[in-house]
Image (cartoon, rainbow, N blue to C red; front, side, top):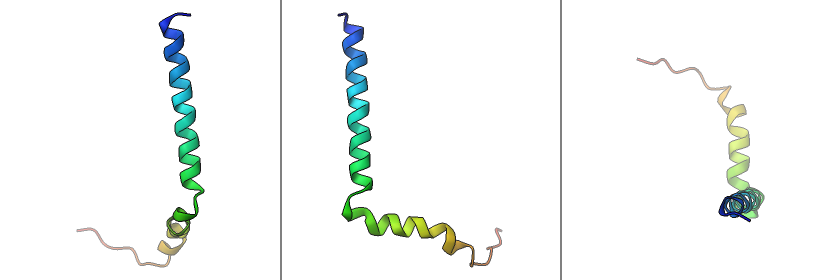
Length: 54
């Protein structure tokens, strides 16, 4: 195998590990309040009057 093959395998494994880490962070219990607030942010902003930009 050439060095390019090892590089491709390494990048693929690194990408997969990053994906798994993001999924674990997103579904961890510690981030639930932040995620709930972010989910409601769009719905809560509709009741506010539009601010005039100067």
